[in-house]
Image (cartoon, rainbow, N blue to C red; front, side, top):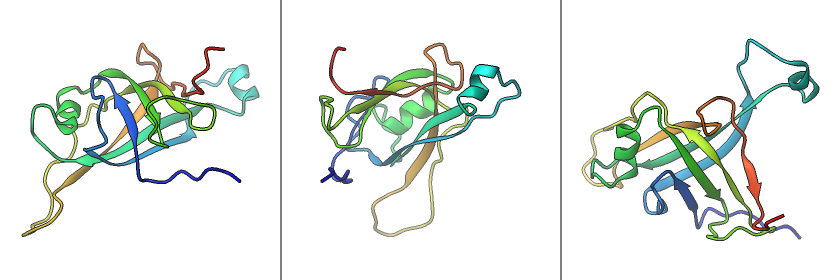
Length: 149
């Protein structure tokens, strides 16, 4: 029997933001075909280039310590990330972490929303492209099983 990933816990670190569980409403790691004008034979042999990204939904807050404020204040910044969809703080073979670098988009996150009397508040969503440590695209996501091999 396989272990199902459930949306009850989250471990997501992006740059200096080490406790995003209270602010993040969704996190999706995806891979799409990369845009490239230049394809090498090695790229073609692998079937083309893939551009991984992480799309994060999060609460809007202009507090200085809020993730929304960090995204707003750091366009173009390259930051390390660690994503554990099982919510575990230590990676293992059964519950790995997915790690790499991402680039904060140059477009600022959304702010505001529709009129509401009482409700959960506004959220924003940002797609972060996975890059190399130097910011070059496309980057790679590494599966960290917690072993040192």
